[in-house]
Amino acid sequence: MYELLPYIYASIPFAVLLLLMALSVVGIGAGMVAPRLLVYPYLAIFFLFNSTSYGNLAIISYGSGVYSRGSGLLYFALLLWYMLGAWCCARVSASFRRQAAPPCNLRPWFFAWFALLVGHIVVATFLDKKLSAALSPNGFSNIVWMAPLVSLMLLSFRTREHVVELGRFIMLAGLGRALYGLARWAVGGGDPNNVYANMNEIKIKLTFFDINDSLLCALAFSIAAVQLFQTARVERARFWVAIEWLTLLATPLCIALSYRRTAWVGFVLALAIVMWRFPWRRRLQLVAAGLPLMAPALVYVAWKRLSQTKGAGQGLSGFLYDMQSRRFGAESERVLELKLALADFLSNPVTGIGSWGRYTGYQRVSWQTGVDGGQFIHSGVLHIGLKTGLIGLVLLAGTAWAFIHFSRRALRELPPELLGMGAAGVAGIAFMLPDMLIGTPFPQVRTSQMLAICLALPYAAMAASHAARASAHAAQVPPRRAHLAPA
Image (cartoon, rainbow, N blue to C red; front, top):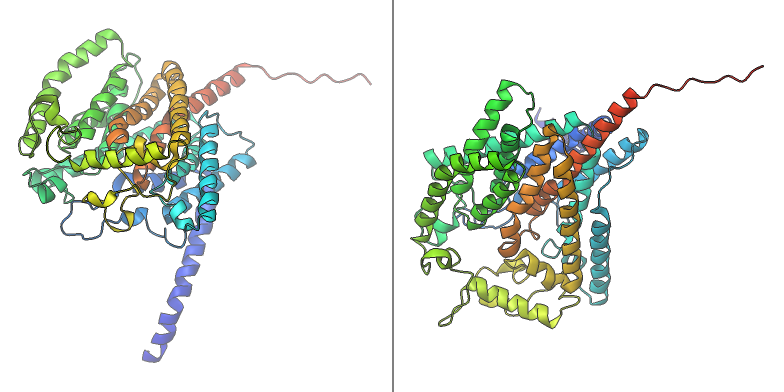
């Protein structure tokens, strides 16, 4: 037996390789028949796994685990390559069925982003910069990777039933994540990635530090709220009605207990988008019922955090204590970071400093350390301006305009059973606006892909609605009779 052990150990790599090959064949076959079967595992990873360990004293590395695995030799994470492979399966499947890609006015803008990235790669080559630096997530390559995910979701969820199924999947994921966060907060010590308690000496527990968990809760809340309170009645089982009510109660509480200011403001914006879909009388009813419960909770958690924060005053100035320039004394590191980056942007206003660039003086900011030092800043908009100049800012504004232009029409035309999905996508983008202004959304794989999911939801809902209308119209039109020519 012992003589066979060396042969067994030597055969393990080949056995793993054969297993991976078999799984690939099975996955490709499933992707050809039902592409959405490849999408759900991908979405589940982004819904359930944190993207940062920042603030966790038990973990030294600030790596992002599954979101960076394989990004060395492959330049990008294995997860993204899996998504690209799923897109290829969905595209081939659609070709076999002779199904055209659903319309999406974001495609020209994503092509422009890809062309801009190619331009940066060419310039980096002439400047003897590494290809890995030009393609780094700390540039803007994550925006380019948003395009295949949007396309994959449009190719995979084509029917009304598939989109409703996707909405329920998102709602269950958000509810499960919220209940897990609340249970950990109530029974245990909350999220171990607690930068406030571990680094700022603020005695609070929080549900989730990662903004993406709050974003998932906001998506689930939006779907549940529209389903429950829209004027048109949508028939569904009592089980799903109960799930919607539970989601409506658990997700806002989870967001409030995250103690993230960007999550609080983002949820108010998302709630405004959801409320806008209701008639005036229903809005007044919801405000009268929800405001007495939500407002005191937000005021309490804000007071509990800011009252223990050094330098935070009263009122709005206290809420934005670290984002204001000071007349006397040293600037806060957040403001200093933005000022240093803005100075470099003004020095290179048209093209920026390049996707590989670092802004001048980043060593003066405490968190700008390690290999990523100086390559990111706490403002998504200024980050794009710094790396790509006015060219990138124009593309960012154009992408936003295309989404808003389409979403306004989609929210007016979507049928009741799909309206929740369309509204959730728009509410998710609204939720992330504060993070885009004072956060780091684009250098993070999880955040950028979650943004892509939000972008895709209104387009998928609208495409499914058009497909249902076309199918109903085809069923009503009688088939033409064939006319035989006389012999």
